[in-house]
Image (cartoon, rainbow, N blue to C red; front, side, top):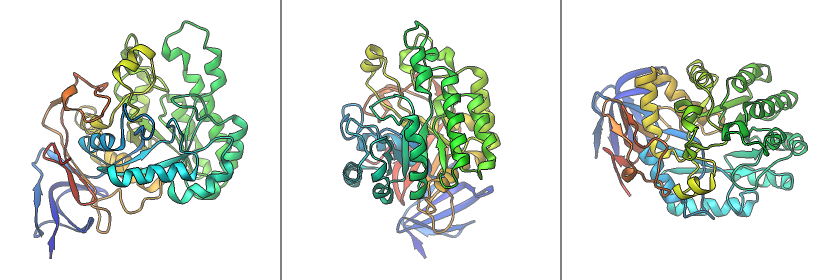
Length: 420
């Protein structure tokens, strides 16, 4: 049998890393064998590479429609392919938020003609649209609520959260939550503290504690705590095991790489929640290795460099550098490739109900990320695909990065070159 594409090399399989060939036909993995597969094209990954199941970034802001000057679906998904990401989940906080079936359908139609990798969409939850959640559920990968103000105007009140949890639970879709306590943030608003102190750790911890308590009481919802940044918030998630493992959490790559010391004096690194101390960063890395951090995300939130410097907007781009940071985790931090495969692929696929991807196995989508771990790369502005044109990792040298990205059987990044 001839395949459309064969990728061979050291393959990260469920539970092991082995030399193998992966045969893809009609966009699906049709065979995984030691040798003997023939195809129209064969990619032979060098010994410096690992072949992972395609990376899934379940937290990105593609900015279209409304903020296309920062990013659009085409440029954002090119950045994803550049970073080795084969599936992205887009957040709902656009100028016209994705809080209705009409807005959700508009995004889906835009992606059909523009996306270079697969895009799934979150539907936003507010106090005013609870009656529409079940109408949006068939088209949404999950629901997203902001419990404090961030970019955009989407905020769900405390009373609204109590009502939203059973409503989201009834849809069967996961509920991702930006957890910060707005009252605590407001209490700091008049101070002249640093940005990190204006959104302090206790704001995140208080909000996570409230969400975990509500999920324990409700028997139907699965909650994902977005971009956990503190050791204490992570401990709360770890302690929620009595809720039947219905509370998951994600860690943003910038919270694993940078600390508050990097933020001081550098408005480009302002994010919500802010960068934290070294002990928090270490706790997140330990949570990743130990399994309590369920997924790795970029929270790709592009603004122009001018906006960041003049207006102090929160959010950093990151899709171009997903593979860079993962290579750093494996080679410099010592994270096992099987842990990477779980947090970057299988756990997000499982939690968000996408059984057709997340592992290199027969029948799954032909999504593969070939990461070169021994070809040092220094991040430079001119090589970025994100429309905002900058990266928080500029100037850093990483041990490697994405070399091939295969999405649905289509080679989008080919030996480091994008097929645009």
